[in-house]
Length: 356
Image (cartoon, rainbow, N blue to C red; front, side, top):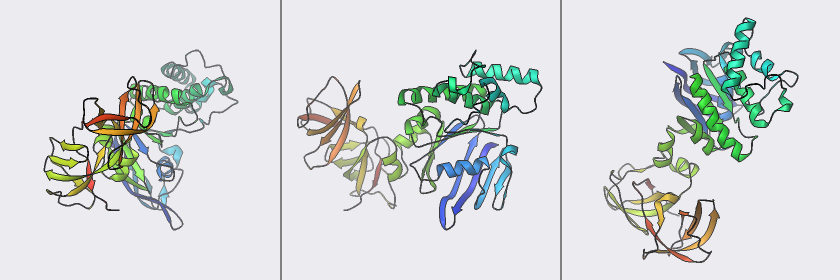
């Protein structure tokens, strides 16, 4: 039985449809993520799951039981759902222990105290229970908010942009720590974020949202290597689409040479039959373009972004098309310099060619 299931869920504000027929399910113990740009409907959908908003269509189920249908919703406090907010929402007048214990309601004091101490140890705040929120760092406050949400052992944990107020380094580290905590507790969770690094670090499965719809619900690996459409290909990771022509079911000819794949070439989006001679746009990631001084194929360096161990080069081909290449940083080339490159892609991600 799925811990959370959405069936054709829709939400509207007046005539504006914000969530448009969303379907997905999350199994017990899994961590999922709603990922997408601002305004795509992901936060609205999370609020509907929490019970803060009604839905205009479809059904939301928790552990197989309906909690929202059009015109009816179970109150948030009855849903056994824990919530971690973007701004932490800690009570400033309560200590850390009291904040965590707040979610335990009327449990016997001895049981509540034991649960609070266990959770503070789990989130790395042992011995910090007597402090107040203003005495803690942002990362520590986020841990307190997570512990409070976990305290009553809810059926589902919702996390709404939980790391957006933190600096980049802390955000990356804490996202991994939160995943470990959730897995240790055996929790089922759903995260909302616009940051794909957070999504990749935390989630077992990700739903990419755009214009109120799930464009693809999949594992992080598949979103990156097998995007379902152009939006997902463009939104996830970095890459460019380069024109090519299908030679046969395992070969595509393009400016960079011939791309050979072990899997049959399939081009999606309005292309029912990807046959020989079909014009396609091939997705190339930065790791598909390899710097090779021995290669006769040359490209001009038009931009470079130093990333420590690597440099991300933007390279202009003879046709004027530009590609990206991730190169070890000891290969430090100047803007305007021509360098040798070669194609090294394992499989073809192709879409029906769009003519200008």
